[in-house]
Length: 427
Image (cartoon, rainbow, N blue to C red; front, side, top):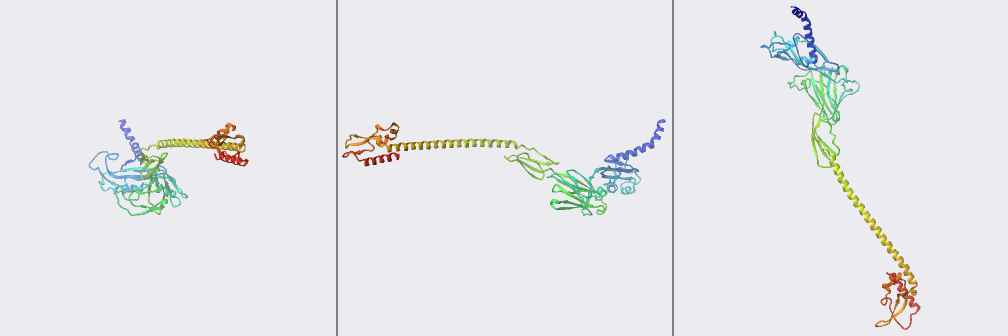
């Protein structure tokens, strides 16, 4: 009895706790059910906006709002466009589930049946920087640019565009979530309103950002690693609310290992060694190069060793050649000097002999078979000079003359001495 009374007293508090629990769940959960009648509220933190992914109103399934399974389950209607008008792109929103708009949107369920709202949402962090006097730079990261932040802080104009950049070799991919657009299945392609433009300055490309098309679509993929996003004011775009999701894609330019070259074609690259035919192929997967790459240093070391060996052999050969040339030159020079010294000594000796030939030679008579002849007697010649003159002065073959009537005159002997001297010098 006391337990029942306590339970009755706690019912109001339990109801309040359930409402608080529902609000708490909505704040942190991704998928929530909001019963009828309940006040639904979403509040994101600073520099965050609401992104509603899906919203249904009706009797979808048994859960928090419908406790028992019956024959009236499975009726619902898509109310995402209404949630986009009330919540998407904003920092917070609040509405009553029994709103007439929700009731009118549901045409598949009986009016007398209780219906609930099933919503999937999240709070997306957006770019907080927003200067109205200079460009706002975003480098190497993914994120969202919100039109709501733009409206509050007045930025993104021609004087203060967002400049999004990545590493060399990478590209920038842009997607737009247009909360004023058509459903995902819509084929509506005309440019209902212009939200701004994208400028790829290095290539001179100017791409218009159109609104009123599909809710989520690819906007632009850059051909370089830097683009500018220029957005128009709220009045110019008729109060449209949207998000631009920027993503860095692709791999940075690959740095090849030492003594190697590198050639890239899109997401494929080939690396090869400078000094041989070795090659490796790598592929860009999720911003990273995937593939095995060898080492070209070993080939360079082998090449260096070969060069050193060849250079050493060549150096030794050059040194030996130089030594041989030097030795040969020295030997030849010595030989020439020796010969010149011999000739100088001979000249000196011959000069002495020429001036004193009578002192060294005396005529002797030798009997010949046919006639008498006189030759020079070598007995008075010094030993060192005898060797030099022996071939020329051995009797009886050299300097022989017929014996005449009496001795020759002094003039004739002088002529003979000069002739002998000339004969000796010619050697």
